[in-house]
Every structure is written in C-alpha cells, then in structure tokens.
Image (cartoon, rainbow, N blue to C red; front, top):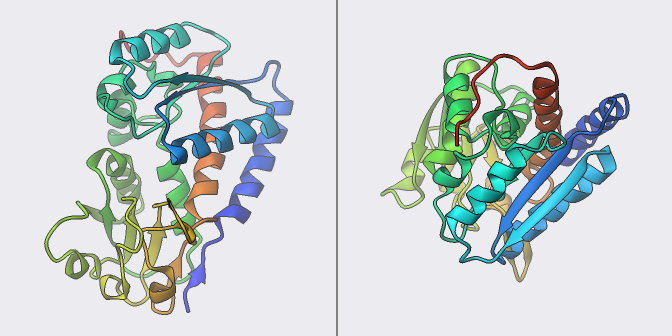
Amino acid sequence: MATILDGKKLAEAIREKVKTRVAALPTPPGLAVILVGDDPASHTYVALKARACAQAGIRFEQWSYAADESEEALIKKIRELNAREEIHGILVQLPLPAQDADHVIAAIDPMKDVDGFHPMNLERLESGKPAIASAVALGIMKLISEAPHRTGSTATIVSSPLFAKPLKILLREQGISAVVLAPDVPDLSAQTRTADVLIVAVGQPGLITRDGVKPGAVVIDVGTTRTDAGLKGDVDFNAVAPIAGAITPVPGGVGPMTVALLLVNILKAYDLQRRGDGEPRSRN
C-alpha cells in the first residue's frame, strides 16, 4: 500500500512559520485576488486563501468580476494594484471563463506575481536566477520530497503547458526529466505508466486508473472536482493506492500545500519589494 503524502499536516507546519514571521514584520504584507465568474471551485479556492491570509495576519482584498468582464477592465485593475505599495501580491484566480489568461497575467508586476506564472518569473526561473515560483509547483515538489524510497528520475505531467512549465524547471533542478501530456492523447495509460513520478492536473475524476501507474511510482493528484460523492481527484485513489509507492489524497494533498506556499510567496514578494533587487519590472 502506498505511503499517503499528508499535505494538510505539512501545510499546517508551514503556515505556523509564516504566521510567526508576519508577526515580526513592521507592516503586514498584502494580497489582492481577482476573481472572475461564478465557478464554484474558484470561489472555494479564493475563500480558502482569504481564510489562510487572515490566520497568518496578511491583509487580503478580493476584486470580483462577471464572467464576461473585458480583459481591459481586468488589466486596468491590475495596473492599479501594481501601483499600491501596501499590496505585495496579486493573484488572478485561474481558470478564467473566457479571457486570455496569459495576456492578463502578463500585466502583473513580476515582483507581485505570487502565483509565479508571469513570463518574466518563468524566464528567471529557467535561467537559475532568483524568482517567485509557482505556489502549486513548490507545493508539489515539497510533497515529492516527502515520498520515501523514491526511485528513478522520470516524470510525466498530465496538464496544460502553462501549469507544467514551472514544474518542469523545478523537477529538472532535482534531476528529474519530465514530459507533458494532454489528457486526450492516444494510449494515455501506456504513456503514464512508465513514469517514476506521475503528476495529474486536469479536472477529470478517475482519469488515471491502475493501468496507468507504474508500480512504486509517486503519484501527485492535483485535480479536484466536486461530485455528488464529494471532492474527487483525477486519480482513482482506491485502485492506484495499492500499487503506488506514494500518493496524495483528495482532499488533503496538494490543495493545502498550494495555499501554504502561496503565503510563503507573499512573504518573499514582500521582502523583494522592501529591499529592492534592482531587477526590471513589467512595463504593462
């Protein structure tokens, strides 16, 4: 039976450290979240982030928009937030209903991009320079590091290219080479079952079955879909757990870690902005 990677327990320890650090700061860090549309999962995630910020002593603002709001309006708000010194982190809750996420995210000041998806942060991460990395990717890497007796150095990521890009860089830094697959590729199971580390972030409950997992593999399930039976991941947990080496549960795996590492990123952004590192900022 696989080792269960308890993201909730790990996250609680990280959040306590953040709370202690925030209490020692001269002024509180600030996070602004832009929420577009009525997707229940997005609203749930933002509520969790708001609660985590409150518990850590971090200022939180939420700016909500209709699903058909124009990109221009979102970018205008981002530019306003870029200019506010008391806001140290800006996060656009993804996915966006119809707007171009790349275009909107590119408007964020890279030093306030606490989600780590701005192209400048990705470029700096790729080149080995200090950068704010994706909170979800950092959380995943921490969970992988907790897996006992991991063997092999290959990973398969089933997700969008945007999600996978920072994760591939962080995996490479740990000597793990990764390939990215779309969920609709032919013979998905045949391709995923060669991976020593399998990461799935699609939002299709039960997409990965026992046939798609290499015995002893580390399985990281990022998917969370609300069903009549409760929250379900992209991995058929009951079928995969008996053969995997380690696996994250849903809920209680990647989700809590993502929120905890977001708080860490807000602190990092706060420190960068207070001391100034001389790096160029976005001109958007």
